[in-house]
Length: 330
Image 1 (cartoon, rainbow, N blue to C red):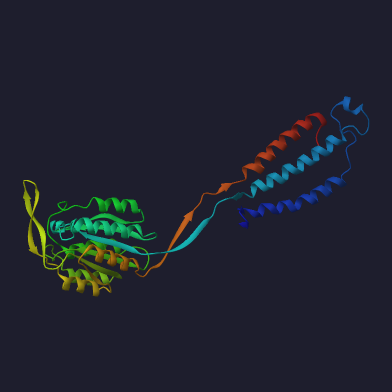
Image 2 (cartoon, rainbow, N blue to C red; image 1 turned 90 degrees about the vertical axis):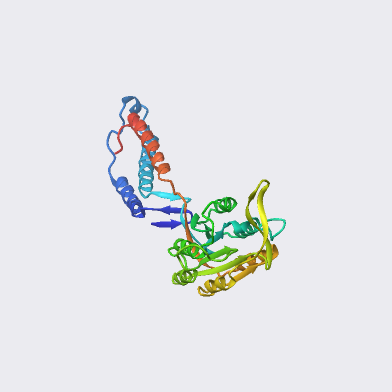
């Protein structure tokens, strides 16, 4: 294969036949011309030079037919190639708590879920080359979106997160295990898990610290985010005639547990006590280390052999028409 600028010759060895054409021309010139080279007596009656122009034209056509045929056999093509690009990116799964306590109204005028969802959506919108997945959890965990670079799908999944979709509770260990299962075989070296929760692990059969240590064996860093104020906060306790009923309750977030699972994997734990703090945290995570992600873009080739092949057929047809008037070449 030979590359000449945007033009590519797939089978260049056929072009070697072009070197034989000059030898064929020399042999043709040394041959003695036929005594009678006219197919019609009417042409002969015009004189000894009649038909020589047609004879030269036929010779030219025959040579051009051979040239274009050889070029077509070499398979020229253009306008396509496989490009390898390198960009900075990471593999990331966001484990998002959707337990009923996320409806607590301590981030006035919105609840924790609405504020956290908005900030995570802003965070996702800043990513350009990362693969992102979403795991929703409460008393159990479920993958909402596997790792993907289709960010509109990720944003739509975040919009759809609501308490009540899963059994209530807070199963942090199950969430870590589910997210790690998505990350462990991801390509590239950088694997990050963000665990966003507002509670204490009270459900699930998997110990969060054990799950975090297992995740670290796959090179997964865990960044924990505790969402909620300190002290008392209006927390939903049931439904009344006019919607959810709230009572002031003490905010309970297991900072020690979230710190342990983060540091055990080489990550960090953040506490978001208000929307501004949550914004600052996502900005810090946005500055995480990045590793090169290689991607290949394939572009379809435009085959050009049809053009010399078409020219060869047209010239061959013209040669046949002229030969019917003049007779075969000597």
